[in-house]
Length: 393
Image (cartoon, rainbow, N blue to C red; front, side, top):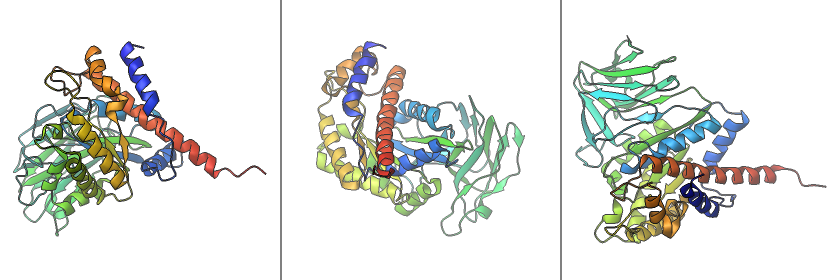
């Protein structure tokens, strides 16, 4: 084990083993994971992880997904945008090709109807645009296409391992009241899925969820370059709740703060309010889901030291977590607390901008986040088991 790994493990040992509580905010997730582990449930447990540029390349989120899947089963790569509005968008284990889409996103807030979908990006085409998803490892076994229909909508077509399937008329499959719907065609087992706007009207796609049959876990990494949590106020509230409801996540994760830290006039109180508001908007679509707020990764100031603005960010997020009944993962503490920046730079876990992780850093932080979550799960499971056992005579 490297020195950096030892240092990170030491920080983990001081912060990860949070005592389980009867009202643990993560209990809904833990019950779902326990069902997978015991064999009582064979479904896909879903984690929805919203954030900013820290997760657009699916670095540490991809590591968390992979590690959870090693223990609980592979539920697939999860929700993926048809076309992002920014460079650098990746999904671990899913090479992608896309062309021809026009996009709008919740960061810009340039849609009067506020309909940006579950992932905050709407991809549109009058015909001919395509996105191809390839499985680098295990084949896909289930697909969901999140779209907006309506009376003048066009059609979408899937190509499964190169085999064209019948076009799907979006107007026929959508709710006449708001147009939002999910198309779930039979997939079988596929190593490549290509989505094509088939013409006949406007195709509007929010994204595609690719999964395996289960039992297992998936994690939807929903990041947008430059996004602040408050930008979700640009989304129509009922529409967003409907999108979350359609995806049915077991855990809602908010992972912001890296952009807010440079806001003029930043205060813990204002940031707490913005995070709490975003939690409420997302939770409206999944009121029974677990909730977790993840603090931003270590960030440096212009002199290479730990950015003091992070103290306000962390104070605000702790307050929001307590206010909204969410768990809080102190990423900064897990990464070494006050020594996190020095350790990250020495181990080359942070890039030259002192704001984004290197590939090595993503792997290390993802491992630590998973360890934190599993330590808490194991403590909860032990406490739950002990509480259910009959008292000794």
